[in-house]
Amino acid sequence: MIERIPPQNVDAELSVLGAAVTNKEAAIKATDVLQAADFYREANAVVFEAINNLIFHNQNVDVLTVTEELRRMGQLDNVGGVSYVTDLPNHLVSSLDVERHAQIVLEKARLRRLILAADTIAGEAYAGEGEVTDIVDAAERRILEVAKDERRQEMTAIGEIVQGQLDDIANKYTNKSGITGLPTGFSGFDNITSGLQPSDLILVAARPSMGKTALTLNIAQHVALKEHKNVAFFSLEMSQEQLGLRMICSTALVDSQKLRTGRITSQDEWSRIMQAATALYDAPLFIDDTPGITVAEMRSKARRLQAEKGLDLIIVDYLQLMQGSQGRRQAENRQQEISEISRSLKSLARELKVPVIALSQLSRSVESRQVKRPMLSDLRESGSLEQDADIVAFLYREGYYQQEIEDSSKNITEVIIAKHRNGATGTIQLYFHGQWTRFVDMTNRNDEAEAQ
Image (spheres, rainbow, N blue to C red):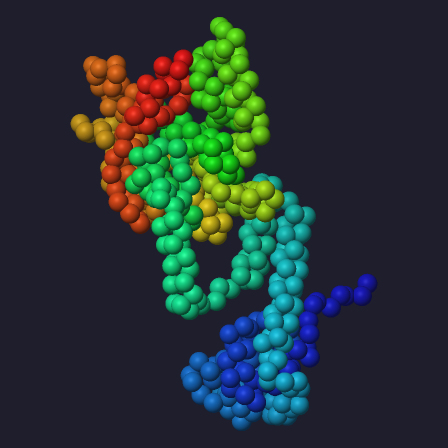
């Protein structure tokens, strides 16, 4: 069987080196695009490394200095001696084309890396050692590394940045509402945050039974139904059927117990249920209920959704049920794993340029103190959640702890914005209609009840 030759273009490599030893500006342009490892022919890689060394030390680059640098490196004979270096200018096509030829070299190098990654993936798949999900995660990481290398970010001139910011300020000035991000449907929250901003990681943390899932489901419904934006909801605790029932309940304003038991008592309730189902049927809301999903799996699904349908908001319920890149069984330290997960979610928000809402369960230590209202220090044993989050919002309901409180106040929930990287902090109050699993602004607390 004839061995296939990997993708390469030695002529382009020699043209780049010929330009580099003839013109220092061309050499600098080449080193901006390429690394020594991008060259297929070993001798060319070594010569390019010598050129890189000279530029790094701000020395002149020509045939003589490159020859001396190779001699200092002990590599002159290995590349073919002095004659190999002195012959390089003969391969120069044009120093003006050095960037184009460097791109050809880089593209071939990326193809070789892709082949290497594919061979490694195939070997691991044939070996079949470990869990299939771990093998798939490792495969995706290798492909992503090749893709990441493709997206080297160039530096941006301050003029371009300022122009972009001026355009943004002008748009905000025109938008008199002051909501520059995605509206959540809760006016108090939106007034403080200006809506959910692209690339932000928003942490919603609370003890169990405070309404984390209900709140974020309400936000997801508002964004999908009212703003007509695409939402990805990753549910690690509840099944998609349970979430679907909750959304019908909160949209139709029909008691959740009636939906669970099928005891619908009026034609009006049936009508509202059908209207809610019809609205939700066409909503751009996508639910994934994979238990123990890994960061890599979530990233892959989010990227695919963005490419196929578009994506405007990601919600994760909840963060502690996720697994890091190595899987929970291999994690040396759960705190470190949580830190990796939170950093990855922030990275995902930045990469896809969408807000990511991550729910977090607070530990029992909150219960052990007299004042049970959450604070930022409650996150300090949870990896780097506080540092990674752009917004930290705690949910707290006094009526959960104080049974003697008046019935009218039992369902008042505080949303404590304890950290806001780019704005003010503060506390707002929402009212929770438990029978509908629905939060509303305090000013609207009686409107929906009266409508029933």
